[in-house]
Length: 336
Image 1: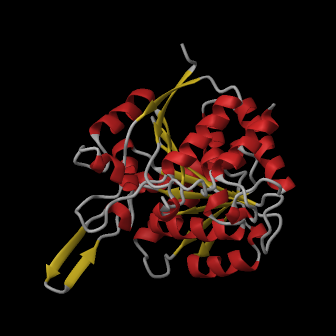
Image 2: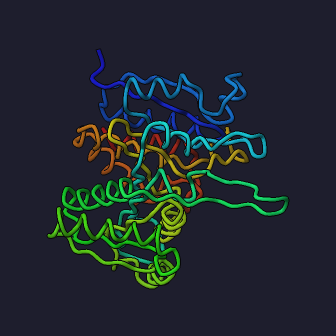
């Protein structure tokens, strides 16, 4: 019997390629797992499930609790709700965690970037509550609850202690959205004062915060924010270190966790051996750390860091000429 059972959602477009690459690397590093493959996204619709997130996929994650997910496509204009939004809401994945750091061999404008974006994942404008008041006039409701605001703040501060992080910065727009964002920062401040007084804390209006991010991202450590802001800022931060191809993602709840490459499904290069699987592999390392397989995670991290630093066998987006398979082979070779 395998020590772990992992639900694998290959996804759409380049998803199956990068998912296969990540699985190969984890297996080669000695990760003892049984992989349960299930569909989501456009692939699920094409297979006749009638939904982008079939019940069998949700049931598998509920049974086994951990999933590794490739990029998916939600068909546009066909009435399907986002796969990612459904996953977060149905599984209570309230914390989106996006580490962002420089990698040796990936040239960027900045050095020394090492921060984590913690995003509330279930509320805000992404609650999906929209109404047409009258023809030509629609509203979208931003939802904030004290329970969710405290829960995500507690997660961020606890993460800071567990990972020896020094400071939590809350991005907000409470000067305009005085009730919703006002509640968010009030809850963060209260949780810090009552439970985590040893962690440094600051608040920053988000537009000023974004300006400071592109001036000097090294001044930040953990960024805490509500749903929409977290979505936008996490991609902005990825751009500071080389793009979505080098940044992983995790969606964490009380009972379940889904780890994912957060880039798109890139159907224009699907099946051409051009995709960079690194974000999916790093997401796999985040998964390993989450389930206590830290030694294997460190082994993989050392391997891909070495390949990137050598810059001999990297994919095109990293300045090389290697394909998906060749890049994956190079990482596996470093594991031996």
